[in-house]
Length: 242
Image (cartoon, rainbow, N blue to C red; front, side):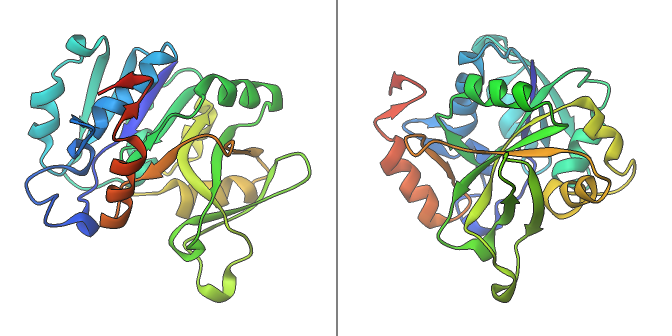
């Protein structure tokens, strides 16, 4: 399988840390977050990765190069204007010709990717969204599931009166190439705001995978979460001691 790491964001909530450093390059346990993500993907046999770039792109290119030093083959996709999470994938349509993984560049996790893939293949949907419980539902994309785990509703960052669950998008997807055809060919678009709701409207099947309670997953997009990531992962990441 191939993977897409979404690494183009400007990390505005983490300023001033991100003024001179892209958010995915912030250190956790002595290594950039993105290096942990590559090691995690590699553990599950993924060797080909695409990374989109926008904010301080040379910091990422300069560190990882073509990926060979890390046992990976990296394809970079620089964006002059931000294309959004889905627009970034659409631009690389030629790269994704089979089932693939999408992971947000600010996510740090030890999720069992093999278990997620088994779930996806057993349910045979067009895509599978990882889900977790959150304390602040208005800051996330919220998901409602039916009895079989099928997604029946998806609302991105709802207003307080629209909150119907604390089950939220965790930022790791397994997608089929057919999803790419549903992404607008031009301009910016996001999976949570645009694509997932549109897939549901068209009757296409998405499933939600609730990550086990023992799985560590955190986005480092805020100072509080970045500090928490240091606490949760500071001693032990990706099965390796740092």
